[in-house]
Amino acid sequence: MTSEAKHVTLQWQHGMAFEGGVAGGPSIAIDADGKTGPGPMDTLLLALAACTASDVVSILEKMRWPVQGMTVDVTGERRPDHPKRYTSIVLTYRIRAPGAPEERVRHAIDLSLEKYCSVTHSLAPDIARRYELVLES
Image: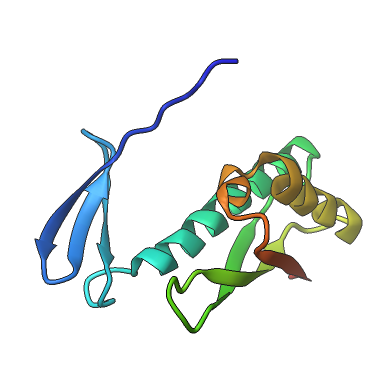
């Protein structure tokens, strides 16, 4: 089995603001105060949304149902006490793929969440996860 190592660097800017990314590549702002960028826990939800959304677009294209629009809203419920980790996550996919049957779109989402999305599989297995689908015309 071959391992694929990833490396990113995060640099403190000021207060609770940081900027990070892959060396020589684009960077993102992460701000625990939420002033100059999303906080770390918000960034985790964004990473999950981006991972699964890119899978779904790719899978639907392979099924010959091209996506014309997609929004993924993610809500994470956190523990009230430290560590304030996520206990449940709900993803709401709003997808515009004219003519695509709902069962095919759900199959693409299921494949992403159950097999392909690395972020999903990097989360603790006891986090309750579910999704909702809104097909838009």
